[in-house]
Image (cartoon, rainbow, N blue to C red; front, side):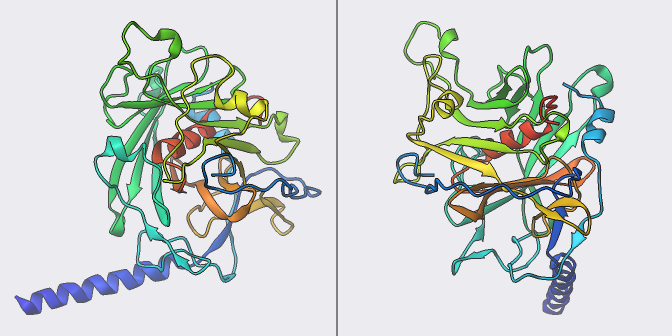
Length: 365
């Protein structure tokens, strides 16, 4: 029996070495299929803020044909190791090291319903995968998106599912912890993503009720705004790659999210951002891609986590630290995407931000 276990252990170690060799190369992936030889990187904002603290200084087109048109592929660019340690994938590569501090791979703590709403723990990196299921589109249904947390040796833990609602005036995605029940009345309903008429501004809510629909009684939960996403208008892509702003509620000194439950019009995240009232809010931006003369395209370094070019690929950072990637999202296959996030985001915030990138934006492309 000991001899058998010894042989199994040798086989496991051999498999780990092969997986490590296969995934060890870092690379630059095209962030967009937009070409513009005279493009320059956006200047870094002079107004720099902290990622955490108690205030702001803290941190419809649905056919498969149109989806494919949005995602023209081009060959990834492989570059030699530039000294960066790769983001820890699902094999035994070393973890990310920043400023001498080791980050570990995040795991589910507690039940799923609670976990997806909790901000990521500090020094933890949560590596996820999103799959797009187009079944039912021939019956007029929208695709369903499934979020899984990646684990060692290819194992996955289901976290969330999302799908766009039919017959809604604006884009409206329901998000559930049950992959089979995406109805608003289900106990598994945890939040939603809703856009404006142009599809350029999105707000992410939890499963609470709108103040306008509150019934009698004081035990009802007024919905909480968890995040907002604003895409710069960019008709026909003349301004270059997508530019997006992400607004999050700030974090307290106990590393808990500040609750934002607006009861009146004009008190929401986007309203505060427009009026420059950023108390207890965090403003993030997508990292500006770099123009590559050799491939005549914009590129971002995803450290091997993204393998195909797409206008949807992005990294979210704070102006005060472009090396601290709060979230990154990108395509690895036709209907498969990776999504990584860390403090101060939670799984629901990151998933909803990713869903906003799938939505058709006539004023942004």
